[in-house]
Length: 346
Image (tube, rainbow, N blue to C red; front, side, top):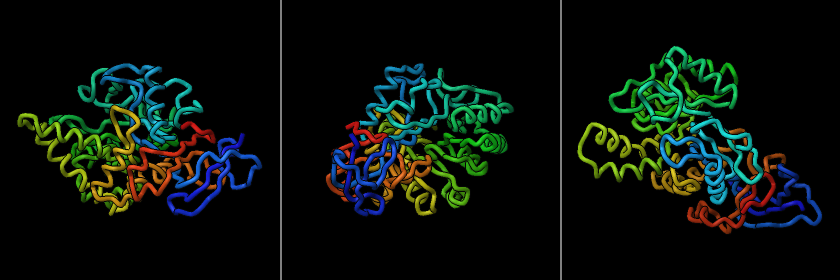
């Protein structure tokens, strides 16, 4: 039976009456369609930085765990994810299973020797990094490079990152870069990568350049803030000082990025899965308008991934709430219905 939803559709708040024609929305009435929910409609939520399928750092990808983690995302209203780094290449059903989110991924992380987590990722020589990144992007559309790591580690040089960007773009892909040090962030901006992940310690003076180059920032603010509380309890060290200083400044950086015109994507980064609401709240607590905080987890992120919103011909994803979630972000924890690929999954 055809599914139907109606109500005030964000971001504009216009009243719509939508029918699922397979995996596409239509406004053409279908007699006998099942009205599953009515209220405030949000295009399906997006977690743009998540690493499902492993429980501990360094673990190999577990298919059963991967499926369980993705179900947790769906329960939270997430109908699409981007995984900028996975423990292994995922199974063929990843991103296509009708009960689980649409998905984009960058395969295993790419990092320098002696950096990143043991057991995860690949560590090509710097001379080979652009070609390795391009081959990954050719297969999946994305590659992910860890541009910097510890406080005493060398960041990947800007010319290497620029070559990687050119190689990835030449095959029609996109490049995401992990950065939590100022040198790595600066190299990423100079190189013109597509997406800066975390971006802690990024020089605010670079934000206008990011906007001019159509770069996006996935600040993973909620996990950085929760880690900040733990870091403050640790004994003094260079690592503690780096983290406390960088994470403490991160909310202000996120707001400055939005003001500079850098698109923000909501990403939760770590366990537990299915907590995109935490990231939306963190963005709002930092000073973003609730409208913009929600956009980072819905229509802005969907547009970045090539997914239109609630309009005829768009993929049939939606989350329906009783009232406007921008007026009360806690509404995000209580959807009336979650629609994925034209089917009610919650």
